[in-house]
Every structure is written in C-alpha cells, then in structure tokens.
Length: 268
Image (tube, rainbow, N blue to C red; front, side):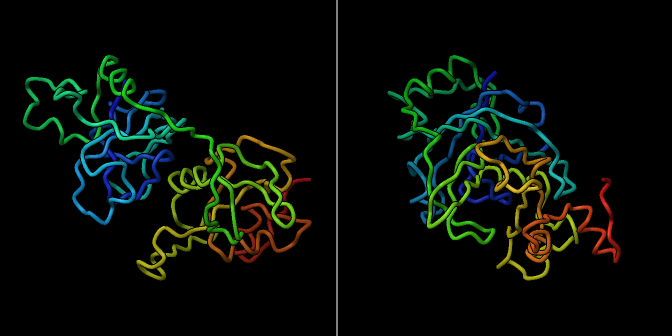
C-alpha cells in the first residue's frame, strides 16, 4: 500500500529530501522497505522557507521508494529512519484538492484529525490520482554543490567514482550517500569519538567528514557504494591522518590502534 510522508519546513532531524526520512516509532508499521511514497508539505508557517518550496499551500512535491529502515541511534525514544531511494521531484506542486475534491480519501472517522499524521497510508487509487497530476523532473541531473570534505567542488550523482575534468581529475561524490552515511553512523567520529556540536556548539551542528573506506580514486569508474559498509564518519583530524600518506590509506582499526597507543597490524 502506498504512503504519504510529510516533510516539515523545520524539523529536529533536518533530513535531506530524497535521501533520508526520520519518523517516530508510532509509524513503524506503516513504513517498510520497498513501499512507494509521495512527499507532502502542509501550509507554510514561516515565510522564510518560501523559496525552498513549490507552493505556500499544502501540496505534493515528489515520489520515491522506501529503502532500508533502521533505528535512529542518536536518541533513546525509539525513533527510526528510512533510506529514500529513487526520489523524483515534481516540476510543479500538486495541490491537495483538484476541483474541490481531495486527492486523498479521508476516512469518516478521521475527518477532524486526518491531517495531523506525518505518515498516512493511501490507496493505490489515491496514489495514481496524485501522480496523474504530476509532471516528473529527472532525478539524474548533476549539480555542483559545496563539499564538506575539503574539495572545492563536488558533483552529485547516485553512483560514485566517475571521472570529471576540472583542472585535473576529480571524482564524483554523492551528497545523497553522505546524508545516508550520517543517518546510519551518526555525527561522532568512529575512531576517536569526537563530536563537533558538543565541542563547538550550534555553529558546528551537523558537521562531520564522511570517509570512503576504499578511496574512490581507486574505483576506476562508477561503482555502487553502501553507506553502511563503504562509508564511515570521521572528525577532520582522524580523516587527515587516514590519508596522510598517499601510498597507504589507514584502515579504521589501524587508526583506532594508533589512538590506543599501539599499531594494530592487519593480517598479511
């Protein structure tokens, strides 16, 4: 059964649209891997977010599929998060009503509180009706975005490692994978435990480096990357030490061994 997922303009989780979606445990039985979802925003409450929305009115703005669902290790409330796959934004907002009729069927017992739910199951008929009014944008367009891990520029894509000429050879890095890695691993350094927000306060909230366990410069072309096993969060110091020698990228276990005051030799 398809599902509506509500994205608020401001949220405690600060999810990246189309990458990760956090939700309270009460919706656990409504979101499962493989489910088709439609993104929805309610009426705008803070006009400062107007430029980031397709409309100030309630509307649907994209479709996607739920990937792996896991526990949010950053809190003790039992909240969860889902990796979002195959996100495709709508070119124009799809309004809540068409010709005065809601595109979602509201149960008679939920008329007064239906819109309070952040996750709402809908029928296939409702899902098809919403999409019939949507013009889909391409989800594969590459855009230049700032790189938090010291490169001047990076290019967004769903797979990583294809070469791009920019005064030399650069490699594509996906912000989608970065957000998924942070959701899975957290914002603390997995070698030394350093947390930027705890050390520096609000100014450093959400900052962390995401390290490729296998350097993408060795890929030789596009390669699928798992945010769970191929990426790990590291502080700037640990990330620099890992890459200090060009001919030897340290493993996380080697790095931890150095921090404990001894070298951990990998088996030959």
